[in-house]
Image (cartoon, rainbow, N blue to C red):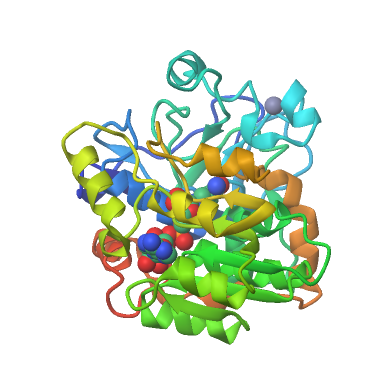
Length: 389
Ligand SMILES: NC(=O)c1ccc[n+]([C@@H]2O[C@H](COP(=O)([O-])OP(=O)(O)OC[C@H]3O[C@@H](n4cnc5c(N)ncnc54)[C@H](O)[C@@H]3O)[C@@H](O)[C@H]2O)c1
Ligand SMILES: [Zn+2]
Ligand SMILES: [Zn+2]
């Protein structure tokens, strides 16, 4: 089959690789009908995620048609259309039983390696390094889905591929970001990053009762899409974000601050962003937490900082003094996708949100390598790429 494979920093290629096969009675194989490139894939492209190996198949936002089933998968049938969560979860362990699917402790065969780096291991993920399981991703014609009796959700005919696909990751992730803010109605939520995840966070914050969303970025079409959802927007290259948020909240700060940027902020967003970039380039650090620092400072006393932008290792110069003295709550996670899926599918079916609003580029798999760069460089108005193998 054809697949998008990682071959090193900045090097994604379309390769011909062996078709996936059933390896375990709980596996399924799906024929991919749509998959997407995520901001998290850019961390792989840019070489920020350790333990990638040349030839690894990328892609964790996947959906398709079931074409083969292991003997223990009884809830799916050949021909079902399914969306596959990016988190691989057994459904039975201590964490899965509590709905904490992204920390399933049975799906990362390299858990020891992950625990060495992180203290404990999270779940295995599709297409996201060997430390996180070494599972092949779905930017390909076919995908093996382990634990297929737990992860994939069946999509009704009334919902199109483009409406359903983002249930695999960015819709639940944006929703979780807003959910973490514990909104009661009437709050001001500030959201850094108007990429695909930020866009879903904005809409979810409104769905959950925020009165006002302040969305921060610098890319004109992303800011425009945020405004289309009802957000007030700030451009970090034109305004001082802290000063403006103080002004807009009568000097109190935002009730909740969402970091939907993560470890690769624009170096034009501040002096510390440049210093972090230099530190990472010279192996003096692993991460670039400019946005996290700013989100902490802009959060009101006893407010919540909700982090969904991904960090990989150790973050320097985080103002913990500010956080503890002012009683901030920190929430963060790789999304336990399965926890949110049924409810979010219902919201789509009821017409409360149509996730396809975020798509700007549709293309065959063969154009993947080029579109990785278009998405990374935010060229050609690109906000979200969907590949149809
Ligand atoms: N927690 C999870 O489960 C999960 C799931 C999916 C994605 N993510 C992470 O979410 C983050 C965003 O993903 P995406 O797909 O939207 O990526 P993206 O790269 O398209 O979007 C990031 C946006 O942040 C903007 N930005 C850069 N510096 C900024 C700054 N200083 N202030 C405000 N905005 C700034 C960029 O212009 C860009 O529009 C990534 O780190 C990704 O890894 C996490
Ligand atoms: Zn993702
Ligand atoms: Zn589990």
